[in-house]
Image (cartoon, rainbow, N blue to C red; front, top):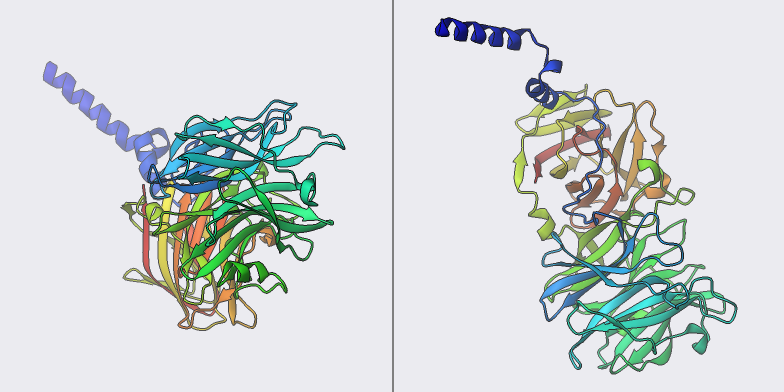
Length: 529
């Protein structure tokens, strides 16, 4: 009897597996789902493992420096809460990292002042270690809540620490712009660096006679500061936020963020000496064919730090209202703050710089994913892991994971051939999002554009386009894409960086596309963690 009951039970179980649809079986449904290429409405997880975001709130204006005592990088940043407290907002929080790929949260270090104090709200600054007195100095912007006509809206303030844990504000130190003929209300973003003259130099973003300038102060002890005049004028009615000065090899560099709503990108100027750097903006001549631009509109407030071997730059990638990938541009300003993004500074023989992939980030993606062709149209062919696309064609690949690294090589037949790659592209997607490598300047240059394609797509999104770069002499493009939830960072030939926010990348198929000419794709590899 026992044997008969067991046999009957087994028969029923087997029958149920045969008769049930995939919709009623979670295991089979999952297997079937992995084998499909339809759109999936994915959302960001709370935890970002590569491009850091706190569990509560967002990262604004990073202030990185290399800690010579702890032998690691510290990244101070303005903590954005949504909503912030009225009048008192953006306390300074911090992270530590060895490789710019993984972070340890250090929590809140410098709190906002009270509503009646000068630093009710805190603005950008910098941190530097002084070996003479073994103290860490954080210079920052103090924003007065509702200043009267006789009060300063913004001043430079300072806090110190002996252990990088407990910080003490110096309530006797207030560097005011109007003392030296600068604005009372636009006087912010102090940055301190060591010059070759043995002095500490401080730059402050401000205005003089209604025009933007970088003011300069010098000190021998970081306690007493002397006005040294205008370091550099700003041209074309712009305002250079978050300045950063450093020497790399034989060159001096100024990195700044252009706050113009029409542009809003991180740029740089260079000079063989500090004095030459000061003069590089008069007359204003951009240092290279990229117009001095380092990344897209989705990477802002970039500042650097070096351990003596590598120099990295950290900025923030903004979120977008309603998770709308197209809500970006001069008339659709993304939300302030977002995720922390790091690049490696790449210096070229002529002194120009570009941004490349951080090794610590690359190594995180240590599990290889199978690459499967899910769909292709006429003009696309596959041959032993190599792909050929002609005219208006595409190849759709299987679903990505949450954290992805995609790398491949594109060889175009001519300078005029146009190609790209798309995310959030299911077989039933009415719109999807494409990085287009577009020929420009009579096919002598290239530029990365962002487009919403598909039946209901808006087309070209002007507010998040890239910048001009030289067409490779051999028409070969080595492309690497790193994603962490919705943050997507693209590198081409270690010469071009393009950061973007693309909601829905994770768990969706993606494609490589040709728009004109002939495109050969090889060395395709997808990995994740």
